[in-house]
Length: 325
Image (tube, rainbow, N blue to C red):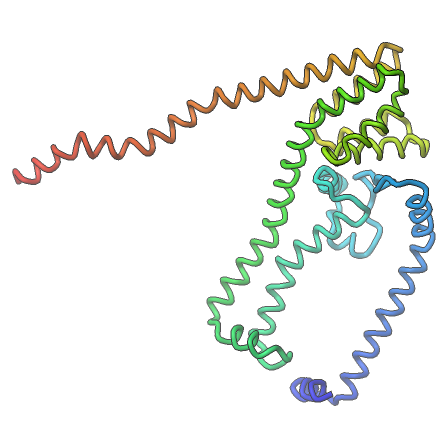
């Protein structure tokens, strides 16, 4: 109460007015919460039933073109369907899924890039308005204005570029793990089909066997099964799985599976051939990187050795001219 009275005195209002405003704001938040709960009650029941029916998570994959319907979605999520789809696709490839993944990502960016600098600047230019711990207050108010400006600018840059760099690094890392484990998954799938298992049963068995080694692939295989069991067309389910995996080999795998099922050819031989092609393609990429190494090394060696060579060859001449003049 002492803090409320001090804050009301600094703002020039009566304490009862400040308490009443806080109470009214709390009631407004409570009513808004009730409204959101009532609006999403049916959706929550459906999602709870889906979670209870299966162990795969998430069971329902949202398409990237889903329109933003909430207030926060309209404010923080890109309005254009192309940008919104690209962001949600990148988040899915990175393993960040869910209806609010794009919203949470943008909230983190805006919170670090705009919210945190605004709070720091407000506290700095209004000392004593909000009670702070003594250590934090001494540290904050001891800074100069140019230091606060530089710090807020750094937070803005970190907020808008840091999460994007982190997302890009996570996407690249997940793609690398998937590229390394995908041929092994196809080999196990081919072995299961050759042993007499149906393709869907072999897919489930591979997902169980590789759960500890390649959890990304296992999760995608389980999601495909759940979508097919839910009645989604098989071709669309496999196409979306390839989009979520984010590698070229996944698109080829989806095409091989669908063509084999459509034309009645042996899916076992098709998977065996395709896995061999994947390994050969990976070996060619490794050879390409190895062939680029001499060029890259020559540039580094020239950069490091050229000053030493110039000193050794031209240095004595320069010293002689200096002694002569």
